[in-house]
Image: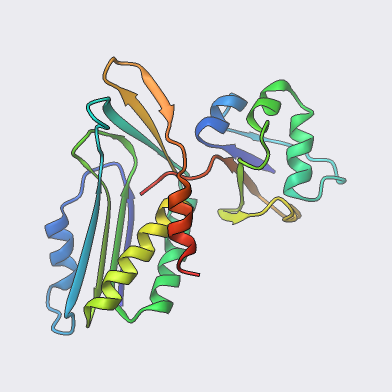
Length: 151
Length: 83
């Protein structure tokens, strides 16, 4: 089991991260990649700004990864979460889950995202097209319900 | 102990962090929030709806009834919106 967790301001290269996870491996039969992107919300936004809690962000994602690995037989797990100013169309988050068979990889990636959204200490704020700073994005109840379904 | 604030809690309190000497009678996170609210209107504003603001002790999520004994760093922040 190879676990990679990074919190960084830079963009990431999904193909390179996938290659790093699978290179030289003959046991991986399934790899699920989830990429979260910055939307412009119908042309309203010029950027999202992501604030995070350094130290806790890494620790919390590590704790979520431990839960994921205890629930599914994974062969690899990569989580990269960006912070700072992110423009529409750019990546915010990457989750790669690798396993022998697809069910574990799909479910592990889904669980990871549901927990990331509600438990990892990141906060989004909108920057608007007119140059002003918009509101902090409000947490969605649907995200809490998505997490709760895992029991 | 050190208190740290994030997102709109940070903006309302008006600082990113501070060192505080907390009286011994303050035993839980909820006690600490009540004590902070007595220190000024900026704290009253930040914690006006106590059910909303979340807390972490030494990088671990905690509930309001959690003990603050031995805590080095306590963080307050809004519900998270990452991912």
